[in-house]
Image 1 (tube, chains in turn green, cyan):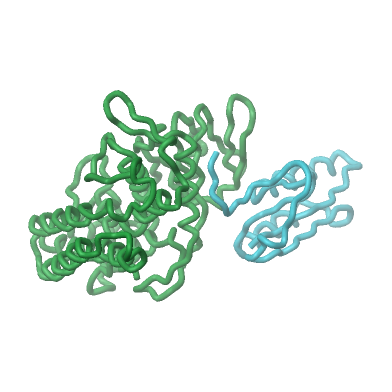
Image 2 (cartoon, chains in turn blue, cyan):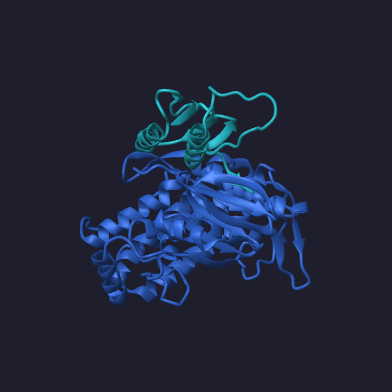
Length: 343
Length: 96
């Protein structure tokens, strides 16, 4: 398995990133803030108006280092992609599957099973760990219906029906998500998902965590030679990394939601770190954003047993491992795409 | 693994001073400068071998020397820093 390399986040505004030898150099005005060797990095993520020299863009593209630009608030702006690598035969097969609704459905089905399974286990775990602080009966009702949904999904071969089932399962899961928030309830609550812009603290956190996850997923897909923009469950739309969104579904709850919950429940963040704008949008301040990034990077270093590969890998490599399994399925080496089922 | 690279390049001649700057630049490509002629590099074994070869070609073995200390993968407990010029942790979260 490949080694997990580090991701560099640039959150200081008015910085300029350039290349010096094999180093990325971060400058502000004329002073050098930091320099890191490129071979230790697998992605660079900038927030705000960091300029990047063409030489560095080229170097990143050549070394397969994802270079992403985001706004100060963490909304995705652009990413730098170099020459397409990997196997053209693999990508053509991916397009063929994407054009065929039935074959797409066979993949989408497994992705959705992964998503429902993982959401279910988050709820099950919570009821086990905090039995006295939750409405167990209500949560058990939801997990039971998620189990049922999984059984139905298993036999569906129609994309529209699958999307409907996925939507229902998400509504079910969201209906008890607020119960998982155990601390600071007056400032952190979840009354449904909203985005662009997020309207409360929890949604702001979730949106940001999903952005981080989608960046990791997109880079992972590109690393194995798949086209992140051609999906099976999500339809093609210019500029949307549909396959990355597809593949994220099964990781959203275990990777992003759990981190958000533990930040709140362990009181690592507090309500002071958020501001509400006139239009109701909630944004995080820079320090809180840094805390979230730090938690995200630390989580990526944690080791888990990959349930399908049966190998100990870090959380940060899970997107890469799943991208690899997807490529193997598309290539015909696997009979089915094995979703990531968290235990 | 963490590789500590230290060098002594004789600067008595103009050629020596040229070699010194080349060696320093090469080390900088691979890691961070922690003291004047001391570099810490996080490398895999291929990169380490390449660094050794590339530096070996730059120096003049009759007057300069190179030392590589391999501190392995579990190097966190092996390095302690006192005083100015604190280094960064290449494997921790990198946020600027």
